[in-house]
Length: 476
Image 1: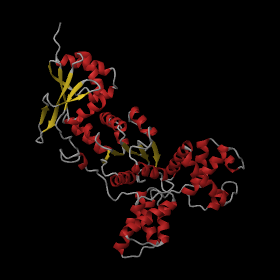
Image 2 (image 1 turned 90 degrees about the vertical axis):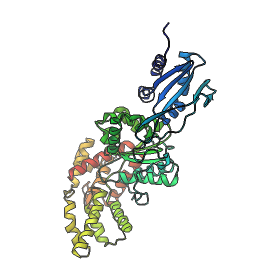
Image 3 (image 1 turned 45 degrees about the vertical axis):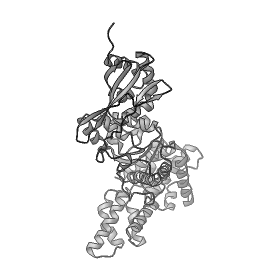
Image 4 (image 1 turned 60 degrees about the horizontal axis):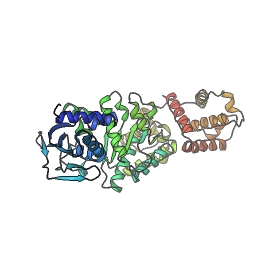
C-alpha cells in the first residue's frame, strides 16, 4: 500500500472540495493553498496571508474538517504556514508551535493561532492598519452641494438611503448610470463622504475602474493577485466609477467578481457607476451583469430648466458670486447638455468679465456662450419630437391629436408634451396648440403625470429615458 504524503492527502481533499464549492470560489480560496508536510495526524498547509487564513476559518472550516477527517481519520488535525511580508520586499513565513492552538468543538479539529501579518494596500504604504486606508474621496462632493431635481431624484434619495445604512438596504449594489457630466461621480462620492461622517468605523474606498485594472495588472505581473483581492475584500463600502471600462479586461473582471461576491455575501455595500444601464453594457461577463441587477439601477438624466437654474445658483452661492437673474436664466436656458457644461459656461463667463473688465450682462453671456451652444445649438422642433414618439410607440401621428381615451395614445401624447417642454423653447400654450388646440393646463397636467409615472412605473420610466436619448441625439 502506497504511503500517504502531504501532497496526496491534499490532492484527494481538493477532489472532494471541488465538487462542493463553486468553481470561482475553488479557484480563489483553494488552488493557492500548498501542502507543506505531514507529521502523523497533522497536515500543514501554506496560505498566502493572514486574511486568507481568517477567510478559510470563517467560511470553510467545517468543510475542511470533514474532508480531512475523511482522508485521515477522526484524529486528523490541520495547521497553517502563513506567508508574511517582511517589509523589505521579501516574503517570509510563520509556523505556529503545536502548543498555540484553539479547539473547535463543532468539528473536533485544532487550528493554530497565528501572528498578525499586514495585507498589502495598493493605495498607501504596506503595513498600515485597516482604518488607515485613504478613501480617495473629494471632500467637496457632498449631498449639500448636490442639486436634486426631477432628473436625478431617485438616484439622490437612493444614495441617501445607502449612506444611512450601507449594506443594510435592498439597494446593494447601487448602480448609477447616465451620460458624461450628469453628476454621477459627485453623487457616489457624496455617499462615501456621508458614510465616513455617519459611520466613522466603516472603511470606504472610491476608485475608478481604470485604476482598478491598472492595479490588477501590476499585481498580476508580481504574482500577487491574491494580495490584491484580499485588500479589496477588506472594504466596507466600495465605490467603482465607470465600470464600462471593464469591457475586454477579462481577468480584471474575474478578480472583481470574486471581490463582489465576498463583499455582497458579507453585507458590505457596493456602489457602481456606468455610462449605460447594465442591460446595455457590452463586453462584461453575464455573471457580473446579473449581479449588478441584484440591487437598484437608476439613471441621472439631463437636468431640466428649473434644475439648471438651481445648479447655477448653488455654484454662485458656494463661490460667493452674484449674477443678474436674466443672465442666470439665459445660461440655464441655452446650456442643456450636462452639469459639467453648465458650470464650465459660468466659469468662462466670469473669466471673460474679469479679463475684459466688463459687467456680466445678457449681451456678454450671448457672446461667451457661442462656444458652448455649438454642441446643443440645433433646436429640435415639436413636430420632430412627435415623429420620434409616434415611431417609438407605433402610433399614427393623427392619433396624438384626437380626443381618445385609449391608454397607449394618451400616454404617448403626454410623453410628447413632456419632451416638448424640456427640449424646445415653446410656451405651454404653443405646445398645446400642436396637439389639436389643447390649452396650457393640459400640458401642465401631462408633464406632471409623466413625472409621477416615472417614479412608480419602471417600464414607463425606461421608455421615457430611451425617448429622451433619442431626442438628445436629434439635437446634435
